[in-house]
Length: 209
View 1 (cartoon, one colour):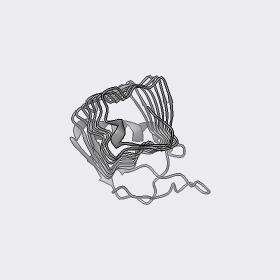
View 2: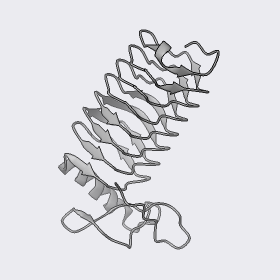
View 3: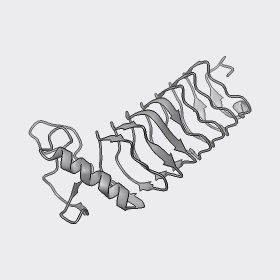
């Protein structure tokens, strides 16, 4: 898992970003800062992009607050990474794999995450706008408190995932496995669960999707 080191800037409580040595490898460095206080923020972001581009497996990197734009994550495997409070825009991805990765309170827009395989991963509090998760394995994940609009989870396995207090607007969850998934106190506006096994999922009393 990623290290929970705090930014070394006086008074800052943000999590620090992973550092890299001159060879582009992850460095154990106690002088780490968050993206807001990193004096070499542009170079640090460039190194993170380069590391992702040149590695199929990304393990234990802390990257909170980074803006990822027009990056291809196809075939990448993330294990135990910290991607909280990030911005993902115009992302192209097919067959991306994630395990025990944190993306809480991140913003996703105009992105394709097709055929993803993501398990034991947290998207709590995320916002999804025009995002496609079509034909993905998204089991045992935390989608609590998300807002999803004009997005699609169609043809996906959402087994035992949690959407508690989620807000789904103009979003499709058609032909999905939602067995043991929880949608307690979630709100739905023009949401389709057509051909999904809604009777095996958990909804608030009186809600019939």
